[in-house]
Image: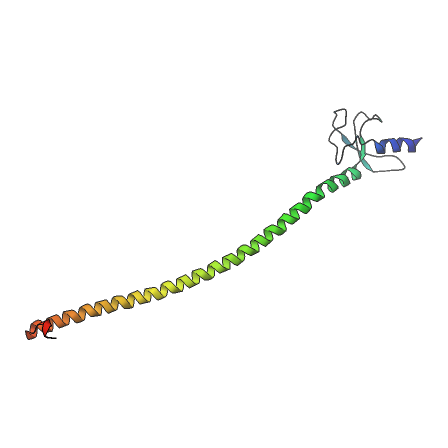
Length: 147
């Protein structure tokens, strides 16, 4: 007689997948521990009415179904993580390329700075030479046209 009761209870999950929050009657389920000789210490979800036609589900079965339902999400997350890792590697490559471009631009700026300084010195030297020539020209009474 006991085994037929157990079979009825095992089938009475009321079509609820995973961890049941409430029975089909609307009452919240509780977690209980079996005290039978067949399943001593085994935990189960049960409608608090304890009627055989109400919810009865072993905890490990509920958890197993819950995990099964979540595995596709985990696989999807794993795929997303792989895509993100690939994007990060791609961004690292771009970052290195940009750093190299900045180094090149910095070197070019240094070269241009030197060229500008040399150019400025050349202009200043030219101005000084012109002033010296003008001063000598006035001192000698010569004109610039005589050169």
